[in-house]
Length: 484
Image 1 (cartoon, rainbow, N blue to C red):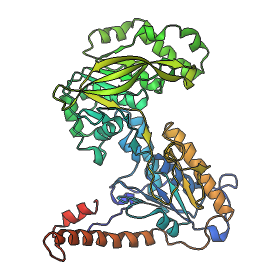
Image 2 (cartoon, helix red, strand yellow; image 1 turned 90 degrees about the vertical axis):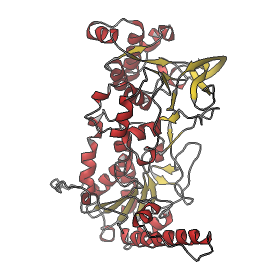
Image 3 (tube, helix red, strand yellow; image 1 turned 90 degrees about the horizontal axis):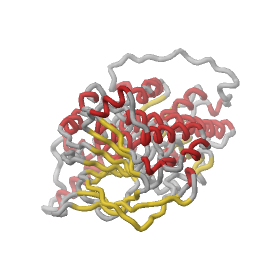
Image 4 (cartoon, one colour; image 1 turned 135 degrees about the vertical axis):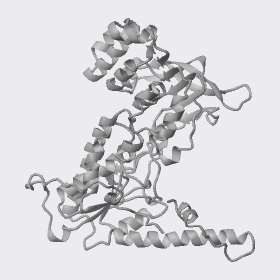
Protein backbone atom coordinates (compact mmCIF):
# COMPACT_ATOMS: atom_id res chain seq x y z
CA UNK A 1 0.00 0.00 0.00
CA UNK A 2 1.27 3.44 -0.84
CA UNK A 3 2.85 5.49 1.91
CA UNK A 4 0.78 8.36 3.29
CA UNK A 5 3.59 10.92 3.31
CA UNK A 6 6.29 11.92 0.89
CA UNK A 7 9.27 14.18 1.10
CA UNK A 8 8.95 16.85 -1.57
CA UNK A 9 11.92 15.82 -3.67
CA UNK A 10 10.57 12.27 -4.01
CA UNK A 11 7.95 13.65 -6.40
CA UNK A 12 10.28 15.77 -8.45
CA UNK A 13 12.65 14.84 -11.21
CA UNK A 14 14.56 18.06 -10.63
CA UNK A 15 18.10 17.75 -9.31
CA UNK A 16 18.57 18.72 -5.73
CA UNK A 17 20.11 22.16 -5.78
CA UNK A 18 21.25 23.67 -2.57
CA UNK A 19 22.40 27.26 -2.13
CA UNK A 20 25.76 27.80 -0.43
CA UNK A 21 25.44 28.02 3.35
CA UNK A 22 24.82 31.54 4.61
CA UNK A 23 27.49 33.04 6.81
CA UNK A 24 26.49 33.01 10.42
CA UNK A 25 26.98 36.12 12.50
CA UNK A 26 25.94 36.88 16.07
CA UNK A 27 23.52 39.49 14.76
CA UNK A 28 21.85 37.23 12.21
CA UNK A 29 21.52 34.03 14.22
CA UNK A 30 20.54 33.46 17.81
CA UNK A 31 22.96 31.53 20.01
CA UNK A 32 21.60 28.36 21.62
CA UNK A 33 22.84 26.09 24.36
CA UNK A 34 23.81 22.45 23.77
CA UNK A 35 20.50 21.05 25.08
CA UNK A 36 18.62 23.17 22.56
CA UNK A 37 20.67 22.22 19.51
CA UNK A 38 18.24 19.77 17.87
CA UNK A 39 14.72 21.11 18.32
CA UNK A 40 11.99 19.18 16.54
CA UNK A 41 9.42 21.66 15.19
CA UNK A 42 6.15 20.94 13.42
CA UNK A 43 4.38 23.34 11.03
CA UNK A 44 0.76 22.65 10.08
CA UNK A 45 -0.03 24.03 6.63
CA UNK A 46 2.19 24.39 3.56
CA UNK A 47 1.02 27.70 2.15
CA UNK A 48 3.05 30.92 2.35
CA UNK A 49 2.67 31.19 6.14
CA UNK A 50 3.88 27.63 6.69
CA UNK A 51 6.85 27.85 4.35
CA UNK A 52 7.96 31.29 5.48
CA UNK A 53 7.80 30.09 9.08
CA UNK A 54 9.89 27.01 8.23
CA UNK A 55 12.35 29.07 6.19
CA UNK A 56 13.02 31.48 9.04
CA UNK A 57 13.40 28.70 11.62
CA UNK A 58 15.88 26.77 9.47
CA UNK A 59 17.89 29.89 8.67
CA UNK A 60 18.19 31.14 12.23
CA UNK A 61 18.70 27.82 14.02
CA UNK A 62 21.30 25.68 12.28
CA UNK A 63 20.24 22.43 14.01
CA UNK A 64 16.45 22.76 13.94
CA UNK A 65 14.43 20.11 12.12
CA UNK A 66 11.08 21.14 10.66
CA UNK A 67 8.27 18.83 9.51
CA UNK A 68 5.49 20.43 7.44
CA UNK A 69 2.09 18.70 7.48
CA UNK A 70 -0.47 19.39 4.76
CA UNK A 71 -3.95 17.97 4.07
CA UNK A 72 -3.42 18.16 0.29
CA UNK A 73 -1.10 15.78 -1.52
CA UNK A 74 0.94 18.71 -2.84
CA UNK A 75 2.34 21.82 -1.13
CA UNK A 76 2.12 25.62 -1.52
CA UNK A 77 -1.49 26.30 -0.49
CA UNK A 78 -2.95 29.50 -1.93
CA UNK A 79 0.13 30.11 -4.09
CA UNK A 80 -0.86 27.02 -6.07
CA UNK A 81 -4.62 27.02 -5.56
CA UNK A 82 -5.45 30.71 -5.03
CA UNK A 83 -3.17 32.95 -7.11
CA UNK A 84 -4.69 33.62 -10.53
CA UNK A 85 -3.16 31.58 -13.37
CA UNK A 86 -2.38 34.77 -15.32
CA UNK A 87 -0.21 36.02 -12.44
CA UNK A 88 2.84 33.73 -12.82
CA UNK A 89 5.15 36.35 -11.32
CA UNK A 90 3.35 35.99 -7.98
CA UNK A 91 3.82 32.21 -8.12
CA UNK A 92 7.59 32.56 -8.47
CA UNK A 93 7.84 32.34 -4.69
CA UNK A 94 7.33 28.58 -5.17
CA UNK A 95 11.00 28.37 -6.18
CA UNK A 96 12.03 29.73 -2.78
CA UNK A 97 9.67 27.35 -0.99
CA UNK A 98 11.04 24.42 -2.99
CA UNK A 99 14.55 25.16 -1.79
CA UNK A 100 13.25 25.16 1.79
CA UNK A 101 11.50 21.81 1.24
CA UNK A 102 14.69 20.30 -0.17
CA UNK A 103 16.71 21.06 2.95
CA UNK A 104 18.01 17.97 4.74
CA UNK A 105 16.43 19.44 7.88
CA UNK A 106 12.96 19.88 6.40
CA UNK A 107 10.36 17.31 5.33
CA UNK A 108 6.95 17.73 3.73
CA UNK A 109 4.21 15.26 4.68
CA UNK A 110 1.14 15.47 2.47
CA UNK A 111 -2.32 13.95 2.80
CA UNK A 112 -2.38 14.38 6.59
CA UNK A 113 -5.44 16.12 8.03
CA UNK A 114 -4.53 17.48 11.44
CA UNK A 115 -7.54 17.25 13.73
CA UNK A 116 -8.71 14.08 12.00
CA UNK A 117 -5.72 11.83 11.23
CA UNK A 118 -3.65 13.16 14.11
CA UNK A 119 -4.55 15.57 16.91
CA UNK A 120 -2.77 18.72 17.97
CA UNK A 121 -2.02 17.27 21.47
CA UNK A 122 -0.33 14.30 19.75
CA UNK A 123 1.78 16.68 17.69
CA UNK A 124 2.71 18.61 20.83
CA UNK A 125 3.85 15.36 22.47
CA UNK A 126 6.06 14.52 19.48
CA UNK A 127 7.62 17.97 18.92
CA UNK A 128 9.24 20.68 20.97
CA UNK A 129 6.98 23.25 19.31
CA UNK A 130 4.01 23.27 16.93
CA UNK A 131 3.11 26.17 14.60
CA UNK A 132 -0.40 26.32 13.14
CA UNK A 133 -0.27 27.97 9.70
CA UNK A 134 -3.25 26.38 8.00
CA UNK A 135 -4.80 29.58 6.65
CA UNK A 136 -8.44 30.41 5.97
CA UNK A 137 -9.97 27.52 4.05
CA UNK A 138 -13.62 28.53 4.29
CA UNK A 139 -15.70 31.40 2.87
CA UNK A 140 -18.06 33.80 4.56
CA UNK A 141 -21.66 32.98 3.74
CA UNK A 142 -23.99 35.74 2.52
CA UNK A 143 -26.81 34.41 4.73
CA UNK A 144 -29.56 35.55 2.36
CA UNK A 145 -32.53 33.68 0.83
CA UNK A 146 -31.70 31.81 -2.36
CA UNK A 147 -28.02 31.40 -1.56
CA UNK A 148 -28.39 27.63 -1.98
CA UNK A 149 -29.73 27.83 -5.57
CA UNK A 150 -27.76 26.28 -8.43
CA UNK A 151 -25.74 29.01 -10.13
CA UNK A 152 -24.58 30.51 -6.82
CA UNK A 153 -20.98 29.81 -5.78
CA UNK A 154 -18.40 31.22 -3.45
CA UNK A 155 -15.58 32.96 -5.28
CA UNK A 156 -13.23 30.79 -3.23
CA UNK A 157 -14.72 27.61 -4.73
CA UNK A 158 -14.67 29.14 -8.23
CA UNK A 159 -10.98 30.05 -7.84
CA UNK A 160 -10.28 26.54 -6.56
CA UNK A 161 -12.09 25.14 -9.60
CA UNK A 162 -9.98 26.90 -12.23
CA UNK A 163 -6.78 26.45 -10.18
CA UNK A 164 -7.15 22.70 -9.71
CA UNK A 165 -8.05 22.39 -6.00
CA UNK A 166 -9.23 18.75 -5.78
CA UNK A 167 -12.25 19.49 -3.59
CA UNK A 168 -13.62 21.94 -6.18
CA UNK A 169 -13.21 19.91 -9.37
CA UNK A 170 -16.87 18.85 -9.42
CA UNK A 171 -18.05 22.48 -9.40
CA UNK A 172 -18.90 22.62 -13.13
CA UNK A 173 -20.35 26.17 -13.21
CA UNK A 174 -22.92 26.86 -15.91
CA UNK A 175 -21.45 29.68 -18.02
CA UNK A 176 -24.28 29.73 -20.57
CA UNK A 177 -25.75 32.96 -19.16
CA UNK A 178 -25.17 36.47 -20.46
CA UNK A 179 -24.52 38.20 -17.12
CA UNK A 180 -22.57 37.29 -14.00
CA UNK A 181 -22.61 39.16 -10.69
CA UNK A 182 -19.72 39.13 -8.24
CA UNK A 183 -20.52 40.31 -4.72
CA UNK A 184 -17.53 42.00 -3.14
CA UNK A 185 -14.92 44.43 -4.42
CA UNK A 186 -11.57 42.96 -3.37
CA UNK A 187 -8.71 41.51 -5.40
CA UNK A 188 -10.31 38.05 -5.49
CA UNK A 189 -13.45 39.56 -7.04
CA UNK A 190 -11.37 41.21 -9.76
CA UNK A 191 -9.40 37.98 -10.32
CA UNK A 192 -12.64 36.08 -10.91
CA UNK A 193 -14.04 38.80 -13.20
CA UNK A 194 -10.82 38.85 -15.19
CA UNK A 195 -10.78 35.07 -15.67
CA UNK A 196 -14.44 35.11 -16.79
CA UNK A 197 -13.76 37.81 -19.40
CA UNK A 198 -10.21 37.05 -20.57
CA UNK A 199 -10.08 35.62 -24.11
CA UNK A 200 -9.41 31.89 -23.55
CA UNK A 201 -6.44 31.89 -25.92
CA UNK A 202 -4.69 34.26 -23.51
CA UNK A 203 -4.96 31.63 -20.77
CA UNK A 204 -3.71 28.64 -22.78
CA UNK A 205 -0.08 29.06 -21.72
CA UNK A 206 -0.89 29.49 -18.02
CA UNK A 207 -1.30 26.74 -15.42
CA UNK A 208 -5.11 26.93 -15.50
CA UNK A 209 -6.66 23.45 -15.59
CA UNK A 210 -7.62 22.11 -19.00
CA UNK A 211 -11.12 21.23 -17.78
CA UNK A 212 -11.88 24.79 -16.67
CA UNK A 213 -10.31 26.24 -19.80
CA UNK A 214 -12.63 24.04 -21.87
CA UNK A 215 -15.69 25.47 -20.11
CA UNK A 216 -14.38 29.03 -20.42
CA UNK A 217 -13.99 28.53 -24.18
CA UNK A 218 -17.72 27.78 -24.34
CA UNK A 219 -18.70 30.62 -22.00
CA UNK A 220 -21.44 33.02 -23.10
CA UNK A 221 -20.84 35.48 -20.28
CA UNK A 222 -20.63 38.96 -21.81
CA UNK A 223 -21.11 41.24 -18.81
CA UNK A 224 -19.75 41.00 -15.27
CA UNK A 225 -20.99 43.31 -12.50
CA UNK A 226 -18.77 43.69 -9.44
CA UNK A 227 -20.97 44.88 -6.58
CA UNK A 228 -19.98 46.57 -3.31
CA UNK A 229 -21.88 47.78 -0.25
CA UNK A 230 -19.91 51.01 -0.02
CA UNK A 231 -18.49 53.57 -2.42
CA UNK A 232 -15.49 54.18 -4.70
CA UNK A 233 -13.30 55.38 -1.83
CA UNK A 234 -13.77 52.14 0.12
CA UNK A 235 -12.98 49.49 -2.51
CA UNK A 236 -10.65 46.73 -1.26
CA UNK A 237 -8.85 45.91 -4.52
CA UNK A 238 -5.47 47.41 -5.40
CA UNK A 239 -4.45 49.62 -8.30
CA UNK A 240 -2.54 46.82 -10.06
CA UNK A 241 -5.65 44.67 -10.34
CA UNK A 242 -7.76 47.65 -11.43
CA UNK A 243 -5.31 48.52 -14.22
CA UNK A 244 -5.44 44.92 -15.44
CA UNK A 245 -9.22 45.13 -15.67
CA UNK A 246 -9.16 48.47 -17.50
CA UNK A 247 -6.64 47.11 -20.03
CA UNK A 248 -8.28 43.69 -20.43
CA UNK A 249 -8.47 42.83 -24.16
CA UNK A 250 -11.92 42.75 -25.69
CA UNK A 251 -13.67 44.50 -22.80
CA UNK A 252 -14.83 47.93 -21.78
CA UNK A 253 -15.44 49.28 -18.24
CA UNK A 254 -18.81 50.61 -17.08
CA UNK A 255 -18.71 53.12 -14.21
CA UNK A 256 -21.40 55.63 -13.32
CA UNK A 257 -19.98 59.18 -13.06
CA UNK A 258 -22.74 60.00 -10.56
CA UNK A 259 -21.02 57.72 -8.02
CA UNK A 260 -18.05 60.09 -8.03
CA UNK A 261 -19.82 63.44 -7.59
CA UNK A 262 -18.21 65.59 -4.91
CA UNK A 263 -15.28 63.21 -4.33
CA UNK A 264 -12.51 65.21 -6.02
CA UNK A 265 -11.62 67.30 -2.97
CA UNK A 266 -11.70 64.29 -0.64
CA UNK A 267 -9.45 62.33 -2.95
CA UNK A 268 -6.76 65.02 -2.70
CA UNK A 269 -6.50 64.46 1.07
CA UNK A 270 -6.14 60.67 0.95
CA UNK A 271 -2.92 58.70 1.60
CA UNK A 272 -0.94 58.22 -1.61
CA UNK A 273 -1.80 54.55 -2.43
CA UNK A 274 -5.51 55.10 -1.85
CA UNK A 275 -5.35 58.46 -3.65
CA UNK A 276 -3.81 56.93 -6.80
CA UNK A 277 -6.43 54.20 -6.83
CA UNK A 278 -9.30 56.66 -6.40
CA UNK A 279 -7.89 58.94 -9.11
CA UNK A 280 -7.76 56.03 -11.58
CA UNK A 281 -11.36 55.10 -10.77
CA UNK A 282 -12.45 58.73 -11.20
CA UNK A 283 -10.58 59.05 -14.49
CA UNK A 284 -12.11 55.83 -15.84
CA UNK A 285 -15.60 56.93 -14.85
CA UNK A 286 -15.51 60.52 -16.09
CA UNK A 287 -12.99 60.79 -18.94
CA UNK A 288 -13.25 59.39 -22.43
CA UNK A 289 -10.43 56.98 -23.28
CA UNK A 290 -7.94 58.06 -25.89
CA UNK A 291 -5.65 56.40 -28.39
CA UNK A 292 -5.33 52.62 -28.20
CA UNK A 293 -7.76 52.36 -25.27
CA UNK A 294 -10.49 54.10 -27.28
CA UNK A 295 -9.95 51.88 -30.30
CA UNK A 296 -9.92 48.73 -28.21
CA UNK A 297 -13.06 49.60 -26.27
CA UNK A 298 -14.93 50.64 -29.41
CA UNK A 299 -14.92 47.05 -30.68
CA UNK A 300 -15.20 45.34 -27.29
CA UNK A 301 -17.71 42.49 -27.19
CA UNK A 302 -17.63 42.14 -23.40
CA UNK A 303 -17.98 44.55 -20.48
CA UNK A 304 -17.44 44.76 -16.75
CA UNK A 305 -18.79 47.29 -14.32
CA UNK A 306 -18.55 48.41 -10.70
CA UNK A 307 -21.85 48.88 -8.88
CA UNK A 308 -21.48 50.84 -5.65
CA UNK A 309 -23.84 51.33 -2.70
CA UNK A 310 -25.54 47.96 -3.17
CA UNK A 311 -25.87 45.10 -0.67
CA UNK A 312 -27.18 41.59 -1.52
CA UNK A 313 -30.65 40.92 -0.11
CA UNK A 314 -31.93 37.86 -1.99
CA UNK A 315 -30.94 35.58 -4.85
CA UNK A 316 -33.92 35.50 -7.21
CA UNK A 317 -34.94 32.10 -8.64
CA UNK A 318 -35.86 31.30 -12.22
CA UNK A 319 -39.53 30.80 -13.08
CA UNK A 320 -39.27 27.07 -12.42
CA UNK A 321 -37.33 27.68 -9.19
CA UNK A 322 -34.47 25.48 -10.31
CA UNK A 323 -31.61 27.98 -10.51
CA UNK A 324 -30.52 31.55 -9.92
CA UNK A 325 -31.93 34.13 -12.34
CA UNK A 326 -31.03 37.39 -10.63
CA UNK A 327 -30.21 39.12 -7.40
CA UNK A 328 -32.11 41.67 -5.36
CA UNK A 329 -29.84 44.42 -4.05
CA UNK A 330 -30.57 46.78 -1.21
CA UNK A 331 -29.55 50.36 -2.06
CA UNK A 332 -27.26 51.77 0.65
CA UNK A 333 -25.79 55.06 1.77
CA UNK A 334 -22.71 55.78 3.85
CA UNK A 335 -22.56 56.85 7.46
CA UNK A 336 -19.19 58.33 8.31
CA UNK A 337 -16.26 59.03 6.00
CA UNK A 338 -13.16 57.29 4.72
CA UNK A 339 -12.38 53.61 5.07
CA UNK A 340 -14.36 53.29 8.31
CA UNK A 341 -17.63 54.50 6.75
CA UNK A 342 -20.57 52.11 7.23
CA UNK A 343 -23.14 51.14 4.61
CA UNK A 344 -26.74 51.41 5.82
CA UNK A 345 -29.84 50.53 3.76
CA UNK A 346 -32.00 53.33 2.40
CA UNK A 347 -35.09 51.13 2.06
CA UNK A 348 -34.89 51.01 -1.74
CA UNK A 349 -34.07 47.86 -3.70
CA UNK A 350 -32.92 46.99 -7.19
CA UNK A 351 -33.21 43.72 -9.11
CA UNK A 352 -30.28 42.74 -11.30
CA UNK A 353 -30.86 39.84 -13.74
CA UNK A 354 -28.03 37.31 -13.96
CA UNK A 355 -27.43 33.58 -14.33
CA UNK A 356 -24.28 33.32 -12.22
CA UNK A 357 -23.70 34.72 -8.71
CA UNK A 358 -20.27 34.58 -7.10
CA UNK A 359 -19.88 35.63 -3.48
CA UNK A 360 -16.51 37.20 -2.73
CA UNK A 361 -17.12 38.75 0.69
CA UNK A 362 -14.20 37.18 2.49
CA UNK A 363 -12.44 34.04 3.64
CA UNK A 364 -12.46 32.66 7.17
CA UNK A 365 -10.50 30.12 9.18
CA UNK A 366 -11.96 27.06 10.86
CA UNK A 367 -11.14 25.63 14.30
CA UNK A 368 -8.69 22.76 13.84
CA UNK A 369 -8.86 20.82 17.10
CA UNK A 370 -10.89 21.05 20.34
CA UNK A 371 -7.67 21.57 22.28
CA UNK A 372 -6.85 24.77 20.39
CA UNK A 373 -8.65 27.99 21.42
CA UNK A 374 -10.53 29.68 18.59
CA UNK A 375 -12.40 32.97 18.27
CA UNK A 376 -15.38 32.22 15.97
CA UNK A 377 -16.32 35.89 15.65
CA UNK A 378 -12.91 37.04 14.44
CA UNK A 379 -12.09 33.69 12.82
CA UNK A 380 -8.61 33.52 14.35
CA UNK A 381 -6.68 31.63 17.01
CA UNK A 382 -6.27 33.94 20.02
CA UNK A 383 -2.58 34.71 20.34
CA UNK A 384 0.01 37.11 21.66
CA UNK A 385 2.75 37.77 19.11
CA UNK A 386 2.11 34.34 17.64
CA UNK A 387 1.99 32.47 20.96
CA UNK A 388 -1.36 30.69 21.27
CA UNK A 389 -3.05 31.92 24.44
CA UNK A 390 -2.79 29.48 27.39
CA UNK A 391 -1.14 26.70 25.34
CA UNK A 392 2.66 26.73 25.87
CA UNK A 393 4.68 25.50 22.93
CA UNK A 394 1.86 26.16 20.45
CA UNK A 395 2.15 29.03 17.95
CA UNK A 396 0.33 30.36 14.90
CA UNK A 397 1.20 32.39 11.81
CA UNK A 398 -0.53 33.79 8.73
CA UNK A 399 -4.25 34.23 8.25
CA UNK A 400 -5.22 31.98 11.14
CA UNK A 401 -3.18 34.32 13.34
CA UNK A 402 -4.32 37.74 12.09
CA UNK A 403 -7.31 37.12 9.79
CA UNK A 404 -7.50 36.89 5.96
CA UNK A 405 -5.92 40.23 5.11
CA UNK A 406 -2.86 41.43 3.25
CA UNK A 407 -0.75 39.94 0.47
CA UNK A 408 2.01 37.32 0.39
CA UNK A 409 4.56 39.88 1.59
CA UNK A 410 2.38 40.64 4.62
CA UNK A 411 2.26 36.94 5.44
CA UNK A 412 6.04 36.67 5.10
CA UNK A 413 6.63 39.39 7.68
CA UNK A 414 3.99 37.96 9.99
CA UNK A 415 5.47 34.45 9.78
CA UNK A 416 8.98 35.70 10.44
CA UNK A 417 7.70 37.39 13.60
CA UNK A 418 6.12 34.17 14.82
CA UNK A 419 9.22 32.09 14.17
CA UNK A 420 11.36 34.72 15.91
CA UNK A 421 9.05 34.51 18.94
CA UNK A 422 9.41 30.71 18.95
CA UNK A 423 13.21 30.93 18.80
CA UNK A 424 13.22 33.44 21.65
CA UNK A 425 11.15 31.04 23.77
CA UNK A 426 13.50 28.20 22.86
CA UNK A 427 16.53 30.21 23.90
CA UNK A 428 14.84 31.24 27.16
CA UNK A 429 14.16 27.61 28.09
CA UNK A 430 10.38 27.95 27.83
CA UNK A 431 9.97 24.94 25.54
CA UNK A 432 10.27 21.25 26.58
CA UNK A 433 13.82 20.05 27.15
CA UNK A 434 15.19 16.69 26.14
CA UNK A 435 14.75 14.83 22.85
CA UNK A 436 11.43 14.52 21.06
CA UNK A 437 10.66 11.78 18.50
CA UNK A 438 9.18 14.09 15.85
CA UNK A 439 7.84 12.42 12.72
CA UNK A 440 8.79 8.89 13.85
CA UNK A 441 6.03 9.00 16.48
CA UNK A 442 3.46 10.51 14.11
CA UNK A 443 4.24 7.99 11.36
CA UNK A 444 3.52 5.14 13.78
CA UNK A 445 0.20 6.72 14.79
CA UNK A 446 -0.87 7.26 11.18
CA UNK A 447 0.02 3.70 10.17
CA UNK A 448 -1.98 2.17 13.00
CA UNK A 449 -4.98 4.37 12.27
CA UNK A 450 -5.02 3.44 8.60
CA UNK A 451 -5.66 -0.16 9.60
CA UNK A 452 -8.30 0.87 12.13
CA UNK A 453 -10.22 2.86 9.50
CA UNK A 454 -10.28 -0.08 7.11
CA UNK A 455 -11.25 -2.45 9.91
CA UNK A 456 -14.19 -0.25 10.93
CA UNK A 457 -15.38 -0.04 7.32
CA UNK A 458 -15.30 -3.83 6.90
CA UNK A 459 -17.23 -4.38 10.14
CA UNK A 460 -19.81 -1.75 9.14
CA UNK A 461 -20.40 -3.37 5.76
CA UNK A 462 -20.74 -6.80 7.33
CA UNK A 463 -23.41 -5.68 9.79
CA UNK A 464 -25.92 -5.19 6.99
CA UNK A 465 -25.86 -8.90 6.16
CA UNK A 466 -25.27 -10.30 9.64
CA UNK A 467 -21.61 -11.09 8.95
CA UNK A 468 -18.69 -10.22 11.29
CA UNK A 469 -17.19 -8.19 8.41
CA UNK A 470 -17.24 -7.79 4.63
CA UNK A 471 -13.61 -7.80 3.55
CA UNK A 472 -12.33 -5.05 1.30
CA UNK A 473 -10.69 -6.53 -1.78
CA UNK A 474 -9.77 -3.59 -4.04
CA UNK A 475 -6.53 -1.79 -3.08
CA UNK A 476 -7.65 1.33 -4.96
CA UNK A 477 -10.86 1.44 -2.94
CA UNK A 478 -8.84 1.06 0.26
CA UNK A 479 -6.70 4.04 -0.74
CA UNK A 480 -9.83 6.06 -1.50
CA UNK A 481 -11.30 5.25 1.89
CA UNK A 482 -8.07 6.45 3.47
CA UNK A 483 -8.29 9.72 1.55
CA UNK A 484 -5.48 8.94 -0.86
